[in-house]
Length: 324
Image (cartoon, rainbow, N blue to C red; front, side, top):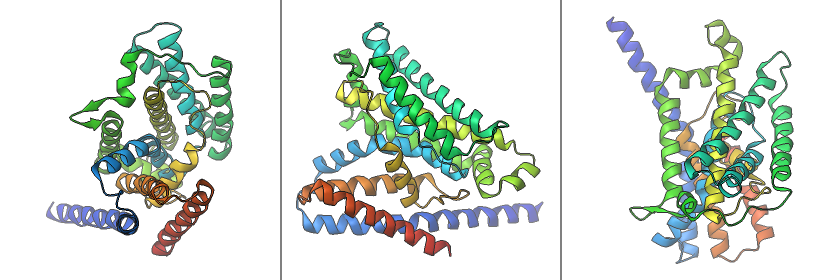
């Protein structure tokens, strides 16, 4: 018994060291970025600006939580931006046209995202065994098309005033989207780090064949990952609709790329089996701070894309070299 306990302690210690090694490069990168921008602009390190950065980051950060699950299992989800738009549109439709209660409308919006996640999961885990890239690429088109069909390509305006709290409200002076982001990350961190189910996601991504031999239902784990990804995208899309008080069928363009970038910058292995949720939020904050800093320095929007691209290359290269 003592040997088992001793072995368990060593295992937990190794896991802790592993996680710390994953988040160290993005954490150092974040620190250097804050120092550099603070020196370059006196307006950066102000409470108002930091809160603004976190509010802007919150939408993509929520999407990135679900993307972390998918990438840890060795998959990819290109449909998150379209699912976010569809969920926002469904919520807006029930709020405006059907005069449904805000809570019911939000739940129905999330339900539409769950259906998208289930569809992705079925294509990937059924006998078809469709590659995640293809199945989620198809869902990206389907969800975006449904959002456009539902609205006839036009935004849904004049949403009920009570709906605005989700994206524009405050609790103890903290914008509600930031609170939603924090709660989402806490739940995901606890699930991935301290539950048996969380361990299954890593096992499937690390070696699916070995995971199957040990009795893990790998298809069920993958299905869960894509449902979680779609739920996170739905929440983000609804929060966005609430913030601008418009359900826009073309919302969410590029969210999938930003989410993937945040996850990879945060230390998650693109091929699965490695990653921590804390690293993902660091990656999302790095993206937000970089954009904010470049805006404060009056760098052109076109040049910003170039700089951000090189930063992504640099951070990912560091992670690859670290693993080697």
